[in-house]
Amino acid sequence: MTQNEVPIIELKNINKHFGDLHVLKDISLKVNKGEVVVIIGPSGSGKSTLCRTINRLETIDSGQILLEGVPIPEEGRQLAELRSKIGMVFQAFNLFSHMTIIDNMTLAPVDVLKMPRREAREEAMKLLERVGVADQAKKVPAQLSGGQQQRAAIARALAMHPKVMLFDEPTSALDPEMIGEVLNVMTELASDGMTMLIVTHEMNFARHVADRVIFMDSGSIVEQADPEAFFSNPQTERAKIFLESITRN
Amino acid sequence: MSKTPSIRDMLYEEPGPKTKKQIRVITLFAILLLAALLAVVIRQFYITGQFAPRYWYFFGRWTTWRFLGQGLLVTLEAAVTGSIIAFLLGFVLMRGKLQKNKIIRGASVCLIEFTRGVPTLLFIYFFFLVVPQTGWKLSAFWKITLPCAISACGVVAEALRSGVNAVPKGQSEAALSLGLTKTRTFYKVVFPQAIRFVIPSLIAELVIVLKDTTFAYIVTCADLMQNAKVLISNYDAMLSVYLVVALIYILINYLLNKLSDRLADRLKQNPAERSAA
Image (cartoon, rainbow over all chains, first blue to last red; front, side, top):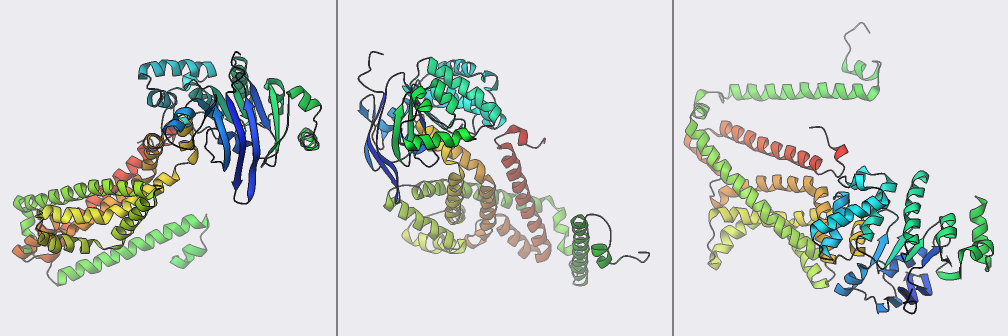
């Protein structure tokens, strides 16, 4: 951690409205190299939107987004280039449904990084091996279980050698028995030192894997703390109410 | 129930799943109706002497079939060429309509609505009567193929656009998040999926182009219809010739529809959902 001065991701005073609704209220946030940041909060708090603004899948009204100190522009070639350094995993997996898993893996490395096809394939197979779906490489996404699809989607993002991985509720669309396999892959990734920003409802995972927990409510960051402190002794009233409401179930 | 059951009895009193029976009855009824209709037609033909050998003997000559075959070839050529042009124009218009630039989008919308709204026949007359006056010399083949293509391109554009809109947004978001540009995202991820959704409607449009080419006689292009008209005046046999030609058109369009089903099945994303054949 020599570059601790320049954060991987820095958000400065992000504001966003959906019509009259102020969904992101002056959000500022830094994610340092190797850090695992988990964002939690009630639904509609803007945590997913925040995650999607980082690589500009959501537009913002004002504010700045920086990747290693470089501002990410609103559109154009440079945006595409910077996006390629930010891996993203979606709730709905979003594997390209007309392609086999292996083609899903190699599309961007070949198209964006201009990697030779064979090299891309070899690396893709290693990644698929790592997430445990190498035997599914020749199938199309619809033939895989949800958990397998999400693990392949994580591998697809990793194939671009991202500086940071964003996870937008990666287990929310999964059956309970498949959540574990995806969280295991993510835990392993975190222990390998990947910088990660994760939006999730998995409180156990947050507690054990996160370096820092961010609690959002109605468009604002309400509380930031290390997980142990946050879960055992939340400072704000809203965080207390939220934690009570989820532990009651 | 010892009496012969009437249709009414079968509908309301026979045991068994109701819907299943209804379908059976309606099918039977339809078959009977069709048979009756056919009988009337055949009887009428017979009375008016349409079965007389002089209306049919020339179908025994292979030159007749060669002549019709030549026409059919021109028809197919015009339909395929016209469809390819319609697809290319439609693709450009679809891209135009999905652009952010207001002028490009507006122009595309106007062209789509214009080509969709104007009947094919008017385009044909335009190419037949107006275009030659500008000094642009076109062969009869292009005088039928171009108007058919233009008249279809707006519909093709709309079909393609509906396909593009049917591709889930997450697909393009995933491609963009991997660093693909908007253009690459469209060609690599969105369009290949969109085309799968719209193949049936594109083939339906091909059938329409094929049928539109029957206007070829207006510009004296020797297609199947035009050659049929020649046969009719040579042998003074209208009904028999039209009947045979209609059967040929029906057969071709039937085959096209079969092809469409096959293709749609082939392109299903999950191989497990494809039918065994």
